[in-house]
Length: 333
Ligand SMILES: NCC(=O)CCC(=O)O
Ligand SMILES: [Mg+2]
Image 1 (tube, helix red, strand yellow):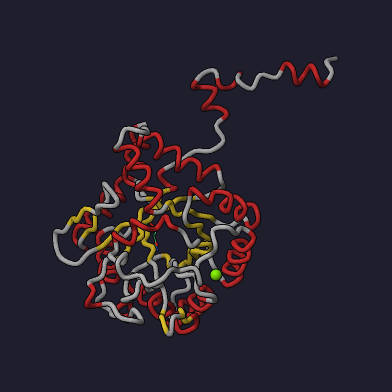
Image 2: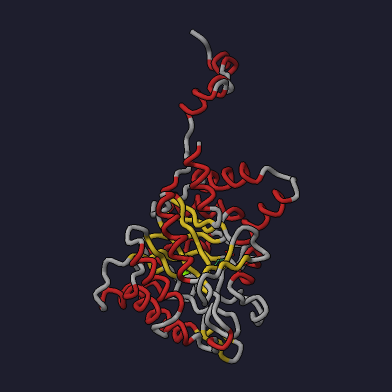
């Protein structure tokens, strides 16, 4: 009989890598079109496709164009669309009150997309930042983002979004207690089947830069968001945040940003065994695009590898601006 040293000596881990068929046979994770959530940007007007300088290949769309994009996304097999709004400055104020106007662009887009493509999922954000004149996710008073007053507005915005046709409410603001409050309000308004995907662990990250250009808040933001987003240095705190949101009724949890936080994805999946998602944010997207445009990396391959890495880290799906390109790529291969 061979002793243990001989077995270790005889082990050849390259054996299963020798051919494509054997690599396929032992592959542990796979990216599929079902994993893709597509964030899109909305702008007022008709027939508008406005390229975003800081996000090459991504444009703001008027509602009619967003409907066309949703049809295309559905044809490609994308599961879920998450619309975000570029709001005219005149409509912004200190409490983000336009988020509660029944004719705001998010509510109109949700209704239009749901009407045209009822089969695709729609997920809306009830955070206030696109709607406030200071760019914060909540009500700003005396230099403080006031938690409970903000939650009251998020709750009302969430109910309106659900009534307009949103399937999932996904608040990105990181106020304490908002998941339970939104759950209660959805249930009380007869919307008990509307799910909640919590931005449970959103970090105070520099990777959101291009997004703020996309929704037109970059020049507005006063200060930073460190009093409500998590310190990028912390991981145990992320566990406590996710635990709290799950206890309050979140159906799914999200980690944001994505790639620099894969350790958080893995810890959350292992700890809670909940449906877990990551947001590959604008800065991650634009870094890959910039390097690819310079010929420094193979953009298509980096795109696919970056998304596969989320699956390996335990994610059930990824919000990514690459979604339509990835779906096309997966259909080809
Ligand atoms: N609430 C959505 C975001 O903040 C997105 C950030 C990004 O893509 O950088
Ligand atoms: Mg929290």
